[in-house]
Image (cartoon, rainbow, N blue to C red; front, side, top):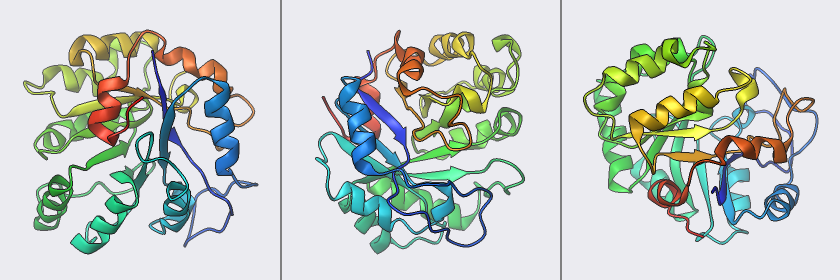
Amino acid sequence: MFRFDCHAHVYESVVPVGTVRYLPERPAPLMQWLSKIASNALTGGVIVQVSFLGTDNSQLLSALANLDKRRFAGVAVTGLDVSEKELEALHQGGVRGLRWNLVGDAPLPDLGSDDMRRFADRLRALGMHVEIQLESPRLADWLQPLSRLRLPVVIDHVGLPVSKDAQREPWIEALSTLSDRSSFFVKLSAPYRGIADPRDHISRLHRLLGDGRFVWGSDWPHTRHEHCALYEGLLALGEDYDDASAAKALYGITA
């Protein structure tokens, strides 16, 4: 049973920060998302910084300021050079993780650099984690160094699978070779961004990771895929799993 929508984008205005790949046509107001949560008997959720706003997390923090931090949290976007003071302000505002959207030709951060070590140390001190959106083949090559970050790592959108055969999915195959998988969590969300039916992939991930490693997300308002995504239908991805322990561990939220 899933109690939380752990991946939604909320923005009251559509104003891009810098050059963006995609700009939605209309806002995604907080009250609309809260209505979706209520009508589907969910308890709370997580607002994830939307890509077109870059590292300007002001709309995210504004939304979180109106929510009960026992049931709602946020995931922000920053650079590796984010200061300890800036991170503390985000944490105080309800942010519990930072997201790396690395799809397309985005360069992968050097996980062994001094900047990365300082970044990871700052996150660790606040009990925060990283969330990653990255295509399965590239994620597969990056999984081993990610496992050495000593941070919880959330894989967005079931790892954006590319194969209909879960036994041949690149990133899941790479995961199966790791001796220590304890840092990884998976977000069951947005099948329309990978393959249409990832249930076999999710089952294999459950065998590899065990209970307490999954959260569900609607990916509302389903940018670029508004025509094919139905909030209520997406809940079926999580009907066989429970998110209570993962939601508490990652976001500090409880039912």
